[in-house]
Every structure is written in C-alpha cells, then in structure tokens.
Length: 207
Image 1 (cartoon, rainbow, N blue to C red):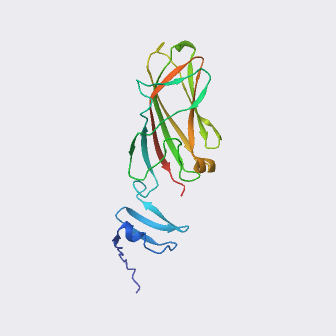
Image 2 (cartoon, rainbow, N blue to C red):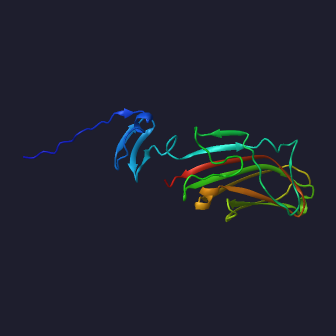
Image 3 (cartoon, helix red, strand yellow):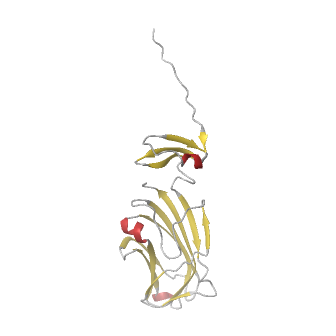
C-alpha cells in the first residue's frame, strides 16, 4: 500500500541586506522581513504583500510654497505657462517614493499606471467670461490629449474657488525618459492660482 505524505518546509526569514547578497538565480524564493521575493527575468520581484516598501507601489504628496494667498500666480489671458510646484513640503508613503522632482512628474517604467490629484485655489476678476484649462504634456512635448481639466468661476468676480481633480494615466517611453508636466492657460480674461498641491499614487507596476 502506498500512502501520500505531506511535508512542511519552512524557510528562514532573512534580512534585506542578506537577500541582496544572494546570487541571482531564476525561480529562487526568499522570505524577508518585508515580504516574499522571487527572481524573475534576472531581477528580484516582491510577490507578497503587494504594497509598502519594495513593492514598487506607493504615494507621495508635493506642496508648493512659492505661490500662496499673499503671492498668487498671475495668469495672463491666452498665455500658456507650466503649472509650478516647488515641492517645498513632501509627504511619502515610505522613503524612496519619488514621483515628482519639483519640475517634472516622474514615472518608473513604461506601462506603469498612476493616479494624480491636482489641487489649487483660483480666482478671476472677470468671472463671467473666464475659464482655466489644464493639459498634461510629455517631456518632449508629447501631448496627453486624454488628460485635461477645466476650471470655471461660478462664484463671481475675485471669489476664491477650490480646484480638485483626479487624473489616471500610464507612462510611455518618453514619459519615463523625460518626465511630464502640467500646463495651465487662462482664457477670456486674467486669473490667479495659488496653494498648488500634487498627490500622486502609483497603482500598478509593470516591472
């Protein structure tokens, strides 16, 4: 008579420093304090949990300190400028998350996906005929036509409005190589913008 027998195999839990010293071998599995790792396509990949440090996923918030209620960004009618954010204050899900460098929005890999929230306050002296357009641009001027926003002025002349909009996008090769940025245009009249915040979350990692 042949009986099936179950076996329990328990691997040691290594430190991240020890894991990084191991020779890269396809199909290897290692458990560390951060999760379970395997080698795939010549690189370590974290397979569980799919969050936190080492997963490639995370979030970061970037607050501008230059343009405030006492120093507003003045938009001239019909003139397109880059939406500034000096990233003076940065909040991250964990150390090492960087999706913006104070000038360009960043992406890690081609086909990674992200959700970005753009927040600012705005006003216009001639609210009835003025609106603001936002457009995402690639590092070499590649237009992301699907990623646009618009702000209107329903509260009246010089009244403060709050803009808060979510945008979902994936990164192409130009994005990874050169970064991306927001452009903003006031149309129909001048406008002011201040208290600019970017919140960026990486939702899927292709690598």
